[in-house]
Length: 81
Image (cartoon, rainbow, N blue to C red):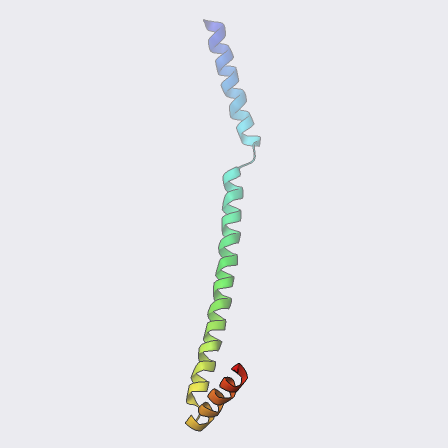
């Protein structure tokens, strides 16, 4: 009985010591998640920037005089044919 307790205790101590040398998988996953978050935030920023530019172009094209807009529509209709 005493031998089994000593063996279990020594095994527990060995596992406890080995746990300090083992790589932390959670830390690796956290780093990957942080990197993905940064990447997605950069992509979202770029997309918002492009949308802003497109909206400004749309506003500029809407501010053109009506006769220029009609000419543009006729030009695009001629090219579609």
